[in-house]
Length: 350
Image: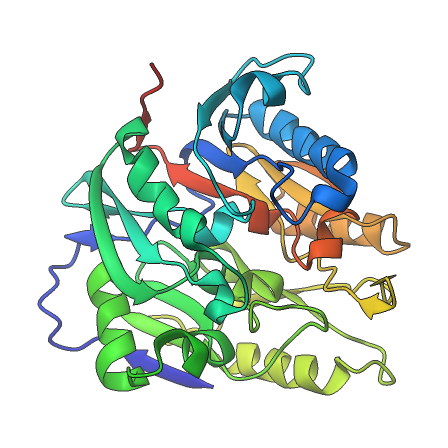
């Protein structure tokens, strides 16, 4: 575990801020499955799951769906209240990682378009990487392009100057090989997000995860001082040692005032397989929206325990479960296919 504080960065106290996901939002963005995406072998199944996610979001706030053909995608929805559609060609549907990340600069929203390379050039992502620039005119916000390779699932903000991430992802040579942690990557992160402390986790992974240990599969801020995290209790499971070490790292973390975080452990699912491959099914991949938390479920015996645990962390919010068993076939889940935009962003649909 490494913790680095930004010093002499030139950032004024409140000049730039990365809102936390648990703050008020304007809308959530999805990218709908299409025949050219990796969902094609089971496109109808995947599409129904995306409809369920979008419908759950629309109960609480607006949902923006990026799609190949508006009329085709609309045909999946019995009702489209609180749902807007725009067209843009994409490679796939992982909105969390190829969408803009919004910061507030001197009270105004700026969408930052980081570089997306398909998780370290594992997959073709040229269309996904170009998406934000093409649709930025729909956002009532300033636009900024950033050369740093960064996916939204790789970072967690508590809204008050803290950034939580993993060394396995952000320091992986398949992302920003020519940059060093202390003097370049952290400097860029702190400048972009106005953060004061970067919290690095050196341990924790999920089998089948091809993101190189995104933090949103492992540990999440529920509020400014509470972290929900995946805990493995089965000593025979391959994850036990790494996740136990991650738990100890989380216990050692301190906030800006030197205080430990309140930690709430999420259960693991039973080992989940598809075509003989273990999948990264995780309850940490929930989405926080206005007045609710949408939690992935997997028809697993731990689903109810996970929902109850998330309710404990969010006592004032409604907890909504959505079956994401299909999503994990492509090694992601609910949070991975969504990106929230804070209240300061004004959606502009013709």
